[in-house]
Image 1 (cartoon, rainbow, N blue to C red):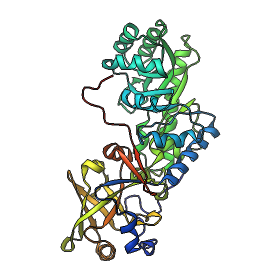
Image 2 (cartoon, rainbow, N blue to C red):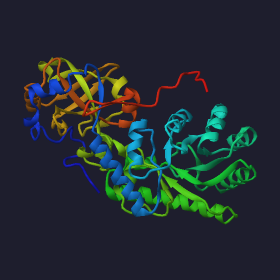
Image 3 (cartoon, helix red, strand yellow):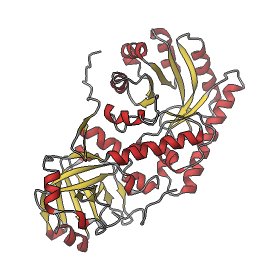
Image 4 (cartoon, rainbow, N blue to C red):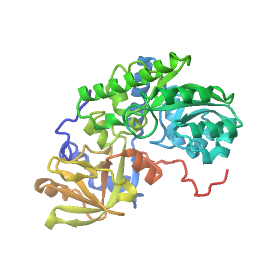
Length: 407
């Protein structure tokens, strides 16, 4: 397992290692078009992350169906095609429609089916091989009556995370749902699916392996229950970045659906899923004020850009992101002793320890830029809705759906 190079609650790693490469005029020229909080994307790192995860799936002989909710971009999606990905996961009907329009034709919507979108679901199922999640009788009854096209369905399993899904040990409900699915000629039961969000709360390789192992045992228990009652050929699908990144043996599964790994983030560094060198996105934020009396800088970059996701230092303070310097390679390693301590709607407050602040203000001025490594890259990307690559190319994302979207 990869692990952080320092204490997992430290605000950053290194201050001086790459600072000599930050050329005063260079960063101003290279990033002169950045005037507002901007999501910078290192394509090389992202492609490396994609390739590594595809190899992990191949070595485990499981289907790789990556979750596209992290990047939400047709352009980034093409990088997955380059490693042979043909089937994807999304988190909404609108996102499925977006990727279907860009040529993806095998799509799982990994969210309990929203029956109010049945008209869109039917139209989508005419275009692609569509897979839906079900977890209750009402949804299956509705689909049986209103579906006009054939779809695959997965029963979502709650393996202990307690978000959505049928409890793995609720045999009577599992049997009832499977029976309902089997009697509808437009529904095909494919298997059991779960998201093991509990792996995000682990803090060691052994704890992560134990949590993942428990999830796989529970999924297999649910599948065995159904197989003993005549429901054969059921597959198992899991998807969480920590387990898929760290563990070499993913066990008795048929499909893996990680998503965050394409970019990673500071949370994944703390878990041990990656190192700082694997993080493929940061937010470039203008510096609008410097307050030496309290060792702080004010950034144009707040909760509407970074989200309110945060981690805790050992002293109990919150970290809403760690700080990097922009350079000709993209950005530096995270700065030791410097972190985003608070966010309001548009403001980000960066705090630095004494020595770190003295060094930082030698390289940053009002009107300059600082980079923030997000705590949770999925939410940050969703908020900013556009990438700027290190070469200056702008990559769009799935548009924000209207409240009353037209079909």
